[in-house]
Image (cartoon, rainbow, N blue to C red; front, side, top):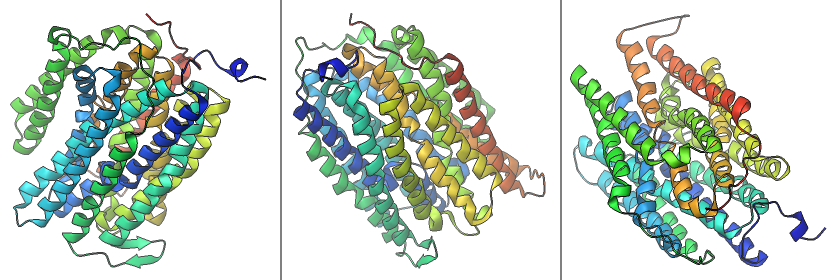
Length: 488
């Protein structure tokens, strides 16, 4: 069978196979650098441990993760500010460079004799900056292989990037365990004294991101006949209103929890509602497409699971008997170790099935992680982090589904929108922390559990229900193969 006869309808890349292969390898290389720095770029476990060390409560410890997801709206603004295809590689390099600078700045801040509240603010800021630039980088990478490779060959890239890539994350997590201390399968590490443990951890992420910035410049992006022009401000006014309102809602809801002020709480709800209306209105043309709308609903529901790892880590004293930071490295190692096997297997499955299978497989694994965390105690509890890591690949297979359902001319906008789907999931992290604090403060108990243990398990249950709802929608309403609409 000839190459042309074996192509799917979405195989329309003008590049030669060597150029496509180069893009696929570079995609995997950039993803690999992201995985190597995963202990600090996957905002949640490490930041929660550091916040706990700095004396923060559960709500504040969840703020870096919450702000990370809230800031994932920024790629949509970047897509508007710089829509030209010729700027793709430059923007990608800037995203990685910004991440490198932020990690270096946080490392220096932790080393200086500053008040803990300043250091906490910098940890939260690092979560926000990572939420802005890393999803933007991922969206640009997706656009690069969307334009620079055939759909039928992407399974190879995904298998390489998300099968081999997590091996680097395992190495990074091993280094994290050595720095923070802990027990790794019976191998005990004394760790490095604070603050040098966290300073080294965040500081080494900076050169790794610098390497990603350098590698990305070698991508091959096919030129277009006509470059898209930036839309006037009037066309994106709703976007420019919705994003700030979203940040305001996060700040008001946190202030409400600290001050116990119902006025702040209701103001936060109003701001969140206004942000939702503005963002939905901005992307109304995309959401009018039935398949993309259904994929959006599924993704938001399942992405709520991305907000639970902070609570899973903070539950360590109750279920494992030691401080969260002692287990952060091992938890990340299991998280990415399982991802190695799942990533390679799911990439192979994609080449033989359809885009919806990837969504269903990863969502089901995600759900299993919460069931495990809810029911299992003792050392076996740690397996929940491995299962969770495999399920996190929903962040690969949901964008792949949306990419397959998008016109080539809409790729940048649609992939930026795909990263924004973490935004509606952001309040879930705050909700999970609030559940723990509410149950603990009111000293509620059940089935012999302490209030703290009950609070964490209830947060796992709520998270599982979100994921299960997404699975139901996917099974009943999403088509197996979305198909790419005709170019307008």
